[in-house]
Image (cartoon, rainbow, N blue to C red; front, side):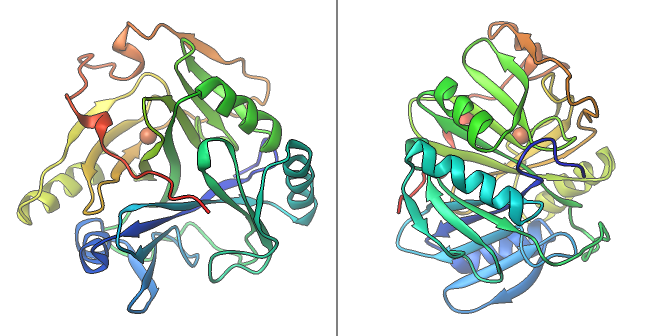
Length: 292
Ligand SMILES: [Fe+2]
């Protein structure tokens, strides 16, 4: 995919879990990801031919450790680094804070989110590694108290583009041709609500629903077709309390100058084209950034 700013893709999330075994079992058996490495404290999973798109770390609490964003080359890495310095954001490390990354730095942005910015040296194809799994990690949805400020930060430091705005409340930003790589929602607490994985078509979503049902679990929402992004999606809740989205059919934006669309928050078409419904409590889930 072609980057439209400094970031070329959403790389991975690194999450803390109180039950590493349950999180690993969920990733492998429920969701069908491929384990690329693990030990007694940490496990790496991916859907495609790259090392990791999600990392689970054993801890005494559930939470979000950090989010990894890929830059296409060392020049863009330096460009982001310069803006981080300019903004005065605290540097966590001059080196990668996650394993299997050669080049990058980490810093803490607004509202306590830690970001690992890195180059992806390994070449890879979109070839699926597993038989049940998603194609790739596509986006994350984070909740913040001051969403407009978070959006200004992402537009300036990450050079991301605004695709859709829901009033002055929720925002969808893109870093490549995907309608959104990071969604920023206003909430009364700070947390990553979900990480979202692209599937081939709606039958893959149905197969996930079937697989969960066979194992005694349930989807939390969907299938639903969103208005902002146009994606068809299903959601379920993982053992550590984060929500996983599995989606297909997202809007592709090839025009770098495509103007942001604006929707009214009260018209729930933006979140559910088909019936305008949102299940009670679905937005209450998520994992809070643990800070550095
Ligand atoms: Fe999403």
